[in-house]
Amino acid sequence: MCDSCHCGEAAEATIAIPGQPHGHQHQTRKIVVEHELLAQNDHQGEANRQFFAEQKILALNLVSSPGSGKTSILERTLKTLGPEIATSVIEGDQQTMRDAERISAAGAPVVQVNTGAGCHLDAEMIRRALARLPPKPHSLLFIENVGNLVCPALFDLGEHAKVAIISVTEGEDKPQKYPHMFRAASLCLLNKIDLLPHLDFDLELCKTLARQVNPRLTFLELSAKSGEGFAAWLQWLRDTFNASHCH
Amino acid sequence: MHEMGLAMRIVEIALAETEKAKASRLCEVEVEVGEVAGVMREALEFCLPAAARGTLAEQALFTIIAVPGQGHCQACQRQVAISAFPAQCPKCGSFGVAITAGTELRLRSINVE
Image (tube, rainbow over all chains, first blue to last red; front, side):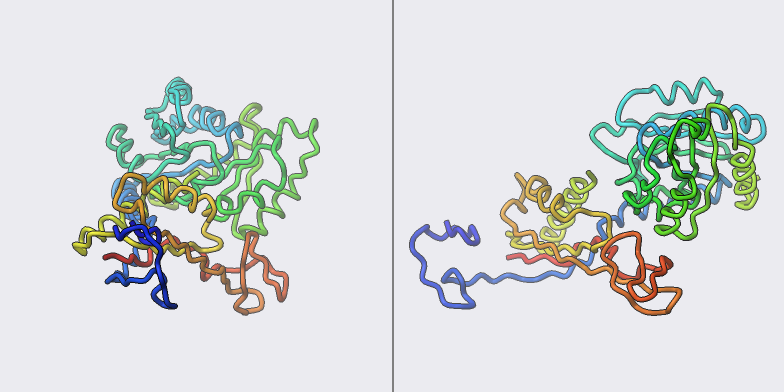
């Protein structure tokens, strides 16, 4: 077998000239493909977006590192906003039903997507989760992505906006370390601010570093534990819901 | 580690195109990866042979073509080169740079026999 091209020619000494490196020629054809690798996901993401528009559903994709408090923020949000706006949740984790159980206890319809070996939610998983839920027309849908600041940035789920969460127990430079995610986000929540007196976290430095990555990013500071700052977050949700004509 | 998923997608598309062309051998696959596409070239190179194992693509050569990052500085209106984020204008220092190239993730072509 020819070692260079595995074409089946006997393995013996070869004599080559430049341009015909292994002594014989193959009739190869070049086929121009020009296929976007994320096209399949993008098409399904667009189909999800159309579904949300038709059903008047505001879909928000919550992204952060593990442990920033996504689920705790949702629990408190659901308790206050639940009676006002019909809200449902798609939970993404590699394994377990724990987050879905917490959300269910907070009173919202929820489906859990376990990605198994996967590190992010994709648009097809959302399509299947939507069929299972299904969310009510004129409602708010939170998609809690897998705790990961890398991969979910690349996969459009059809959401209206990505909300990135940083907790103040992390580093201020997180937006610069994981720029793709913060570039893709519209709003950044700074969580666990009840802990600020015990930490050296510099809120303004964090915002400055995040704005270098994404000059359009807006910020809200809050604590899912104490409820501080929640009024502004809930108002942002109401305003975004109304501005998207979902009411 | 989304590179494995991308590698599997590359092999899947390349095999489908090979079949469509009624070719018996897939020799080469050319993939464009932008410098600021959020994909680690080394990880993708590591994943491709694993994704191709046991398929018609197993013997294929995978060539990754890096597409340089480019942006348009909205402050000084210049075209500038971008190699990482945050995208800062090398001329005026502004961070208001709109990316115009370098986010590509595309299977460009295949060579078949």
